[in-house]
Length: 307
Ligand code: GLN
Image (cartoon, rainbow, N blue to C red):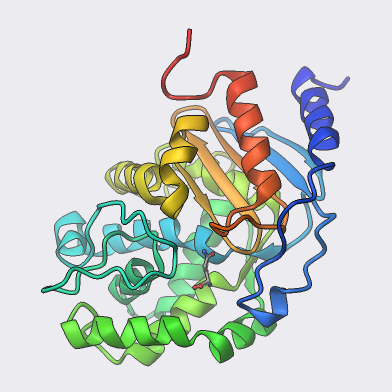
C-alpha cells in the first residue's frame, strides 16, 4: 500500500517538473552539460525510513554539501575553540566564492563559503589515515554506504579552480592555513567531487537531524556538540547570500551545492534532500528551492509556526 507521504511527494514531483528556469553550473566543465530533466526528492526520518521519488538513485557530485560534514569532522578533531580561532561563524551575505576574509586576521566569515571550507579541510587531521580518506569515510558513514570520488569532476575542478587556489594562498599568507596550501586544495576539490545520490543526501541530512547518529546503522558519526554547531552555521550561512530569503520561506538549516543537490534538516525529525541540476543565480537548485518551500509549508516544518 502506498503511503500518503509517497503520494504527496509524487504529486509534488510532477508539479515541479514543469519548472524549467536556471541552468547547470558552468564553472566546472565536467558538470556544465548536466541533464536538467533529472529531478529527485528524498525524505529520511530519524528512525531510518526513506521516502523517495524521481531519479533518487542517480549520482551527482556533492559539491558544497560537503562543507557541513567536513566542518563537523574538523570540529570533532580539533574542538570548537580551535576551529573558531581560524573560522568565524558570521553570515557573510556574500556569494559562495567571495573573498570574504577578515581584514586584519584573514579569518573567513564562516565554514560554508569556499574560503571557510578550504580552511576547514586544513583542520581535518591528517593521521595514519590520510585526510581525504578520513573525509570520504565520514561522508560514507553519514550516508550509510561506501561513497566514491569522481576523478573526472575532480580533475575538471582542479584545472579550473583558480579562484579557490587564490583563496587558499591568501589563507596561507594570513597563517589561517599553516601548511602547504596545495594538498589542502586537492583535498577540498576531492571533497566536492564525492558522488552521492539523493537518497544518500537525505540520510546524511537525517544523521544531522538525529544528533550525529546515522539512523539506519546506529553509528555515532559526529558528536552532538559538533552537530549543534554545524546546524547553527547551516541556518545562518548555508544558503550564502540567499540565507535570509531561505530561512524566511523554509525555516530550516540547509545547504546547497552547485552539483544541484540541496539538503534541509528538521532537528529530531528528518532530513530532506532534493536534486535537480538547473541552478539559480545563488548557485542553488531551482527545483530544490521550490520543493523545499512547498514541503516546509505543506508539512508545517518551519521553525516558527505561522498559526
Ligand atoms: N566545488 C565548488 C567550488 O569550490 C563548490 C561550490 C558550491 O557548491 N557552491 O567552487
